[in-house]
Length: 132
Length: 132
DNA sequence: TCACCTTCTTGACACATATCAAAGAGGTGA
DNA sequence: TCACCTCTTTGATATGTGTCAAGAAGGTGA
Image 1 (cartoon, each protein chain N blue to C red):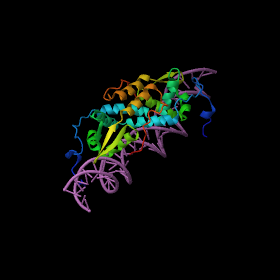
Image 2: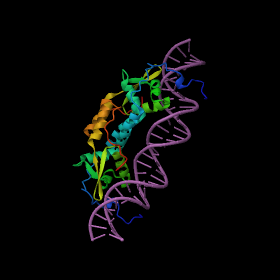
Image 3: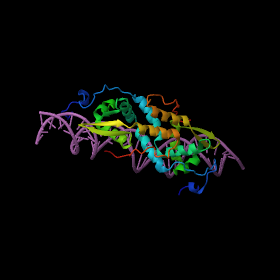
Image 4: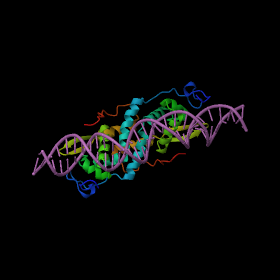
């Protein structure tokens, strides 16, 4: 304890309102929302989503997506897995290839959550599965 | 070149539609949106925002905010700086203390961008200043 | 000027994440 | 079975990020 000042817990601040510590967002809820936002908060993943949204069925396979973002297929696979784990994409095998499809409700749910400020809401029960 | 297979650029995929590479989201726009989402995509910053939104004027000073998230003041200052740099908060000196205030339009703009899928839009001209 | 308060910056550290090459896994078709 | 295709996992590396202690910066009041 090298300081002579009291610890943070021992003294109440003088400066402002000293508002009654009304924590309005539980840490668990904050983490749940942050995980979904973090899945979106990457330029590569946004580009992948934009491309998928522009497709007729909002779906495409990995080999089509890699050229879109000009990255290696393992890297794209990593990003797709992350989006799928957050419930923003679903995946489905079609013969040799795997089709990823956008779940628009997932994106809308995140947008609505941000818009209304109801951040303690469950956002939408998106399963948050690890992978298929 | 240890592989005998042709490079990705040399061969067109056979699997799916071989859709004409219609890049729908420019990399610069993707980065711009990702920066804003990344500012939101942190549990601590979400808790800080939720607390600020619950205050009468949607503002508070640093010394009030540190206890809310139970972190040191330098750490909270770092998070507030990040939110301010993304245009989500504004800062203002009041005597000794500094008041941070939410810019609701900034959050609404991000939500609307996600909701409409117009990700190449400028989101809102939030200045994205480094700091004051 | 001095003591004090609030806030920010710096430096250091641990941890998370983006990326690729290489190899493995799962499927198709001869 | 074998060759081939698509996709994923693993291992390694580089970069980014959250955190704190220590000290500096900016302001107040005596």
